[in-house]
Length: 558
Image (tube, rainbow, N blue to C red; front, side):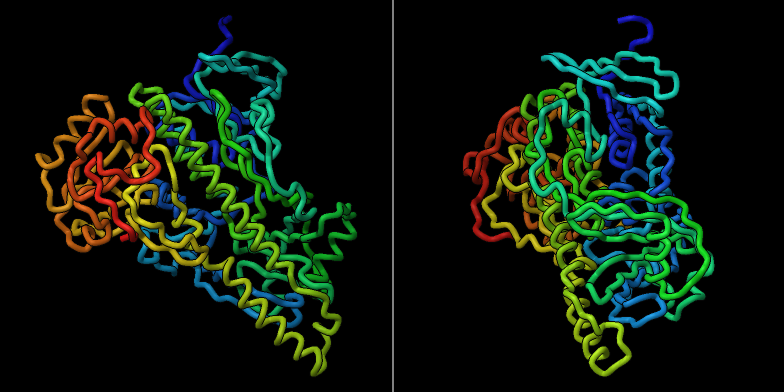
């Protein structure tokens, strides 16, 4: 290599929220990485505005909760979802939610979801990543091509301003470069599903006095239903003067003129008024999941791995889940204690979650646009009123699945993971709305408040953690010794809190660095070395619980 070339353990392509989270978490773990992003990082069309509850739990780990809560989005702004013929027309229904700052976290988490649009959230993640000594962020740097062999990845990167090119050699490359991912294409990974659900056009417009034009009050999202059915939405971008208007469209592409867009916005509001269009972005709503998330030394995450309708707010949050799953495995492998199968578990765990969330998002879209034609829906007649009552009642009931999704955000599990030792218990239902906290292997370790004011989640993150309920370090010594012998980081925490013990349901529970349960039992395993080898990816777990580890088979989850 010449003097201009760079070496790095990990090369991350794409500086959106997923790439920034991945870089920041790698740096938080002491792993060096280079992130390249072809833009300057500015956000002109925020593509997300919901920071989900699981993502906020990761932000808690990273010390970012205060920054998210201090973002410019007004925390007292009501989060209602309103269904109406126009802002000045008839209201068909409403799902009421308080302002983000007025909502308490649910019992299942120490955090709540937050409203922090991408133009506010990306800078928080960027500062987090840039603050890690081992992270290098390069904006206006574009991936041209890369190749890989058994030892490394060689990437050609171009300066978007000067055209100068250089080579970056890395142990691994991670594509966080969006739906048209060059990394995914180069790796030869196929996307499966429906490439076109709708051709949608997003318009950001400014109108400081929009609320004064109608009597519907403050709301986060307005869904417009006309005689033809659901046709558009208006979302409060910053709670003050910027709004996102979306023409939902259909499976056939249509180009809109400025006059078309202005007329559509006035139709949605229901009157003639002055506003300023800030940006227009046509885009395609898709339903796609990659067949795998890895090929050799290359990985994909976020929209490069799964492209979904924004209905539900799962896209970025699923991507950050990808990042947190991958970072500790890359760190373990680079630090020498991760086994040869550890990186394989990334695709095996995250691909089913991505496919699950893609399907849920598409279901939300289908429900939103399922309203049929009702020519009299805006008529000031008894028949029109009856139509509005029926449509509003049925639509409101149907849409609740999208508004209440704790199960989607917290209930995902790594069923059949090669690095989780099954305990023979049956899984709880995987439902969109409801979440059942359970310390079953593969599941998120449940939250519970400890007597000292911490959450159980505050115990996890850096390395493995072995929880011992009414047990001391001497009781856990076989597993601690096995981990030490292999260089795997394992801390032991003893807890004497009955309500937490009841939730975790076993005397010993082993939690991974990403906060998912790897193993649990009421006694130490007969083969502690084998257990440690499984959870660090040096051996593969059995398909079912086996007594060889001292695991008692049970038939029901607890």
